[in-house]
Image: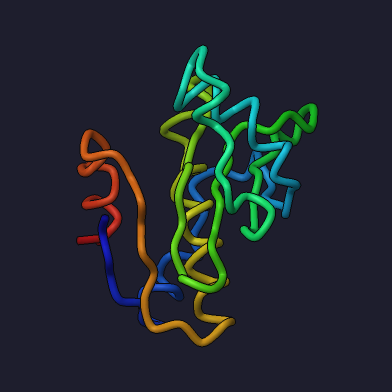
Length: 134
C-alpha cells in the first residue's frame, strides 16, 4: 500500500504525454478482465474480478491503430485509490501506465481529494518510485 500527496504543480508537470499513439477512455469493468488475466494473473480468471468492480471507475488505454485495449487501471472514487494497473507487454515503456495513473490523479483532484492511494505489487515499487510516489 503506497500513499502520496497530490499537488497542482505535480499534475501540471505530468500532463506531458510521452507518445500520442493511444487514447484513454472510461470502460466497463468487464472490459478490464482480458488484460488483467493476460498481464496480472495468467490462467487465473478467478483473481481478475474484484468484488467492488461495479463501484469502481475503469479507464482503458486504446491503441489508435485498431481500438484494442492496451492498458487498464481501476480507480475507487470514494477511497481515492487505484489498483489493477496493467499494460500489454507489447506496448510498455511508451508512457501508457504513467498516463493511466495521471488520469486517476486528475480525477482525484476534480473530486477534491488530497491524496491518491496505490495498491500495487512490491515487485513494481521502482515503477511507482520513478513517478514520485512513496
